[in-house]
Each structure stands twice: as structure tokens, then as C-alpha cells.
Image 1 (cartoon, rainbow, N blue to C red):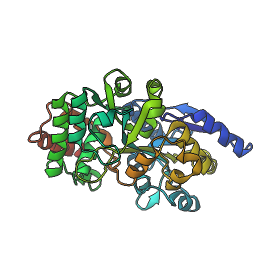
Image 2: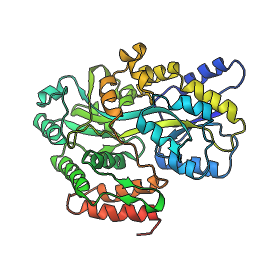
Image 3: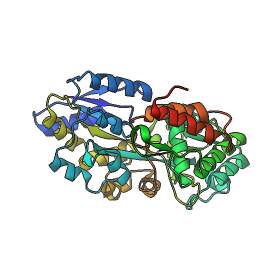
Image 4: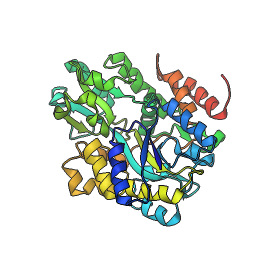
Length: 377
């Protein structure tokens, strides 16, 4: 069987080999890599699923894609017996992202919160106490004070939309509520203006370019001080030179709560897979406690199953463990909409430059509403 894997900073071949061995001849898992760019990845999966491609057995599915593909009838619901076991002790946001119409349509795997990484005593030199919540105002002022940058990871061109989504949620609002074409955007609101004021302050302060593909490389450079990135970022080769000096604390707060962007992967079986029973057996192996422990200690992913955080084999080897645990139950995933790809484009169009709290939320609200309703602007 073929397992389609995204750019997930993990050794998929090693995991596949371990589960192939455990299957003792029942199946062999082969790995096929999906594109790194989120638009290309989405287009490839949508095209092949629409064509009823039976060569696809297991999908590593971005949490942001699940609602869209399940709504289109592309995914086989998880069998009831396996669904019950796969739902127990799962982070609520991961479970919600894998569920449609009260049915589990994918098995939650990992869900990484963004955390605030810093190097050595950078936080203390900037006048920040990493043992307590840090506000955006204090983070930006601290970075300016000691002349370092605040980098924001964007691995697949969805980073800006994820940032705005989290800022709006942190201010007590919602980027989108409701379902389908009738969903309501919440950008033209007090929460939207609070989010825009933070983005405006960040850019005016000149502490970084905003979400960018080279954020990790810049953080590892001479002016790097802070990095907003997933827990798995520390396992990236771009940070090898500074990895041993990195520490993590929780995502900056807008109000009082830690509301970090959450993004992860669930494992799903396409509707037209040739051997769904074998595919779900493979998923059971890939989401086993042993596999989740390997994800946490190897590639530093935050498992969707909360018990993994307390696994003795994980607590010592998962570098961002405390910050992740404090964030994973309060963070926010991408809205459960079939039109998230269109919303990303609308956010990019309106929040990429010249952001201000008076005009940006209004303009962005109109673009997002048009995007989810399929209107041309």
C-alpha cells in the first residue's frame, strides 16, 4: 500500500518500515512524498481524489483539508470500533478537525502548536520572563531593545492566515464561524482590529518580515533572537547550529489566554482505496503509543493524544514539551471550512502590506466573504 506523506519533518520511511515489520506480511507500506507548497499539495490531492485514484491507500492529511475532502465524499469514515479507540484522550481541537457530522473521518496523529523559541538568555536580556505569559507589545519592545529579530515560520504559504487566525482568536473573536458558503467572517470587529494593531506594530517596529519561508535560517543568523514556530522546528536542519542553545516558552498573548496557531496531520483512507481494512490497520500502527513517542522525541511533533506528553520516554526527549502542553488545548486550528485555501488567498491579499487597524479588518472582511461565497472581486 502507498502512504502519501506531506513535508512533515519526520522519518516516514522509518515509521513505514516499522509498521510493515509489525504487519508480518499482511501489507507493505511504501512512502510517496507530497509537494511542500500547500497550494500544490492541495491541488494534487484534490485532483487524484476526484479522479477516484485507487492507488492511494493512506493520506497524511493537513488538518485544514479534512473538512473539505470529507464534505466532498473523498474519505472513508473510520470504522466504529477503531473510531472509539482513536478518539479517546485526543486533544479536542485535533478531534474536531478530524470529525464531520459527528463521524470521525480521519485519525488524529499530531497537532503542533506554535511556541516562542529563543536562544540562550535572549529573553532575559530583552527584559522578558519566559516563565510567565509574554505579550506581543513586550516581545516586540524587548526585541527592539537588544537589536534582534522576531521571526515567524511559514513553511507552506499558509503562515500569514494562521497568524491572523490566532490573533483574532486571542482577542476573543473568530476568523470564521458557521458552515459552507453561509459562514460568517469576524474580521470587521474589535477582535479583528486588535489583531491588525499587533501586525501593524510588528511591521512598524522593523523586527522582522512577518511569516516567511526563511524564518529559521534568519533566526539562526547573527541577528536572530526570537522565533515563532512549531515544536518540530527545532528538528529542522536549518537550526542545527543553534539547536542546543534553543529554549521554548508559550506563544505571545493578545489578552490573557495563550491562543497559538495549531496545525497538524491526521491519517485518512480515501473512499476508493483498494484495501481499506489494511489501510486502517496501518493507521492503527502509525498512531500507536510507540509511534507517537518516536514522533515526539525524534521529529519533535506534539502528539494529538494527550497521554503521550506524560510518557516517561517523552518527557525528557521532547524539547518543547512544557510550552506545547500549555498551548495545545487552548490554541486554534484553521477554521473548519471547505474554502480554507480561498481564505488563505484573501488574507494574503489584505494583510501582507500596509496593515492598519482602521482599514485592514474592513477590507479583509470583504475579501474573505467574497472568497467563501465564490465571488470574483
